[in-house]
Image (cartoon, rainbow, N blue to C red; front, side, top):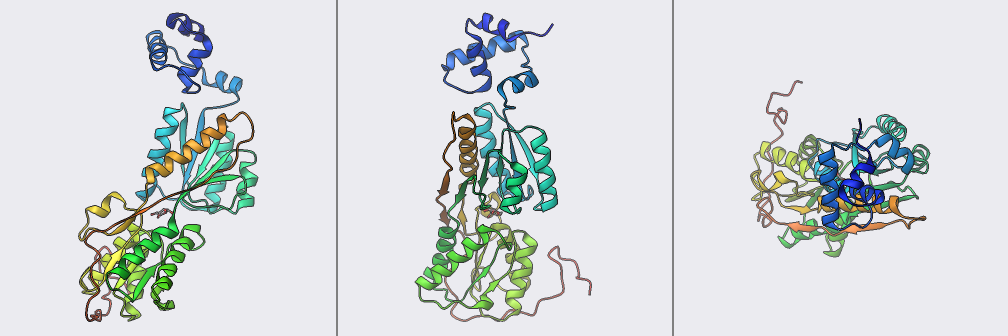
Length: 355
Ligand code: RIB
């Protein structure tokens, strides 16, 4: 015979509403009361009937998180922040890795709607705002890290432009004037903001911008490896590289080493994110630190506050500060520029590249 919520309330000496608040993590409840209710529920083996509760409350206490690439260390940290808040406030998290693929994203969104999630946190949606609006129609949405221009979505993100400016100013402060930028993926607000910050720092220092010092890149190691090889092959004589994220900066380090150049003696390299690995590779990577767990936590707080609001709640546009982390991969500009060796035909993994 299933234990009922009435029996838990009686055992804990509280009302049914108090039991519900204690189990759902919603509303105000004294810590001691919550512990007493949870202990009674545990002793009685109480299992809330989620389906019944969802129908009654018109809520599944479940939020969905959609990320573009779960293999990038940035996103697990983001999910950790989201999960910490969701769990503390009685919500389950459903995760979808859309692999930055529009069709997959569309399918996941439709599936999440069928699962009756209460709201969605988007990290990096490439769908157009009208398509997102169509499939999420009426579902509360918070975008985190990257904007989607969805008029009905709150946004929580780092100050990408200021971070890029910090990275570039750091290189300028070391005497570098020929500074390259390995850009992020096309079409993302993050990519545009970091390019803008790089340009802003050059302009403020009176350093002319040169097209051949900006290379289209991406957020993967192989993107940085390929972009850095292309940059070096251009013979621009650059002495510093600002890569749009840490993984592409790590790929760039491999390309610089392949060309027989030293970091930072010949070329300084700085990234963006401050993933855990940045402090352990050699040379340790200078970068711009995003408070990723806090980004995720704030996105979850904004969404759950919206879910619990009595009436329509105002949209949130929140920008979280970033800071510069200086390590060994950046150093003073070299007195003379060493011309790199022509690229040898090897793959990043070190195998012989096939013709
Ligand atoms: O490294 C992944 C990148 O994608 C990060 O810079 C983050 O801001 C996200 O946009």
